[in-house]
Each structure stands twice: as C-alpha cells, then as structure tokens.
Amino acid sequence: MIIDAHAHLWKKQQGIVNGLPVFDIGGGKSNFGGEIRQMMPPYLTDGENTAERFIANMDYAGVSGAVITQEYIDGNQDSYLLSCKQAYPERLKICALYEEKPMNVPDGFDGIKICAGRLQDKNLLHHPEPFRLAAEKGMFISIDLADGDEQTDMMKSIISQYPDLRIAIGHFGMVTRENWTQQIQLAEAENVFIESGGITWLFNDEFYPYPSAISAIQQAAELVGFEKLMWGSDYPRTMTAITYRMSLDFIEKTDRIAPADKEKLLGENAKQFYRFGNLLVPEKVKNMVE
Image (cartoon, rainbow, N blue to C red; front, side, top):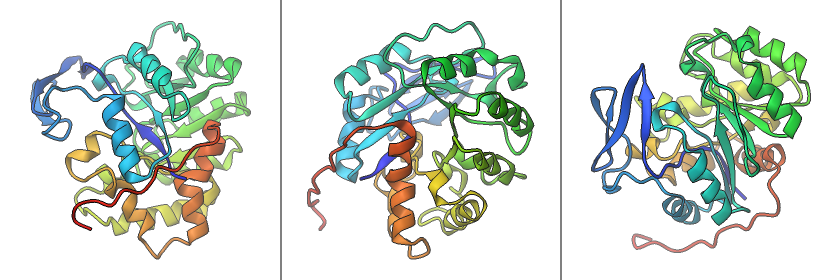
C-alpha cells in the first residue's frame, strides 16, 4: 500500500506569484509572473490538472491514496477539490487553502494548507486562525515552511500551544537549503511528521535515481526515525522531468533503505497520520515495454 502525501490538482489555474498572475497558456505551459514555465507535462494541452488524470497515474504506479495540497501559484482550488473528494472519497484527502484572510472551511475538507514561505507576513504567530480551526475540527495542517530555520522557532511555539494538532512539514524541510535539519527536528514532537513532496525537484540537478535524496532521507531518519517520514510526489510539476512512477521508484528500488522502513515511508505512516481507511492496492498492469 502506497500513499502520496503531497500532490496538486486544479481545474483552471488562476494563481499569483510575487503579486503577478499565473495562468495556463497551453501545451502544459503557464505564464508564471511574466516568465513562461513548463508547469505540467506538455501533452496536458488544455491546462487542466484533473483528478481523473491523477487517479489514472496513481493506478498505473500502484498508489492507493493521496493527499491533495494547494499552492498560491495555482489559485484557490477549494471548490474543485470538494468535487474531487466527492468523486473519490476513499482515495483522496483534501486541504483548504489559507490566504491571509478570515477562513470559512466547509465540511468535507481534511486539512488546511499554509504556504508559509510565500506569506506576505511570514511571522506564523500572526496567523493563529488556521491552526486554531484545524485543532478545533480535528483536521491536519499541511505547511511548506520558508527555507532553513527562518520559521522553525515560530513553529515550536505553535506546536507547544497545540500538542495534539497533526502537522505535516512539506518539501522535506527544503532539504537542499542551509539549516534544513532544523525543520526535520520539528518532528521530534509526537504529532509532527515530514513529507517528501518536492524532493525530486530539490535534487533535480542530480536527477534520477537521486542518490543524494536517499542520503537525505537516511539523515532525516537518524534524527527523527523512519516512522516520522512520508513520501510525496509534488505531482504534476515534478512530472515535467520524470514520470509519476519514477517519483517513488527511486525509493522502492534502492538497497540503502530496509524493506520495513520503505513500507513506513511509502504508506504506513501516511495511513496513520492522514487517517485513511482500508485502501485497495491497484492491480499491476503489464505495460508495452515489459
């Protein structure tokens, strides 16, 4: 059983970066604040990053469930994600997006996403509402912190205030940046976990099979244990360089992580943390090159 702890979906991209718009221009490309970027694989010509396409990728890769997080660069996708959850209630957990304004989180959401590194006011202590709401509603927090230790002391204060609140630190603590282990060590707290969404982006210069990413996973495990680590793909942006299957294949095929630890990293920890039910393992279908 494999669970993806960090993926994105959108029907129409209407985001913002540094105060400038982000929008689809066709061929998987987006205008990214005035710069043209390949946002998705080029065959996604209509700009739609739908649940149906993602579920097909999950089935092919053998992934049972996934957590759909959000990003300001895609725009608020709350309404679309609710429809995705309605279509695939057993397989998807979804996050509402915090946008530095009062929140109204309707029923159906499992967590709240905070893009902490992109906040205009990066002092997390000035943003109590998403943490309070998540704690009150039994939801989890998915948070991508600013590089290094810029926000880790603030997080320690929040963790102390809400010791029962489930918190997933994204992007594997921004692993290629200085002082990244300060983010990993937040998982010394009982209900704080680390997910690896974006790790293939951060080690993109090295590329598959990402030996330095495996080393970083081992280093994080030495600090907080494999039972605190969860795999994430950062679909679909990382699929501009690799396939969805490759985003987990480099972990499955390495002999540097014990099989029991792979099971924790790839699914067991996420099943517990995100409170998935009984998930089915997709049937393996032989492909045309096998």
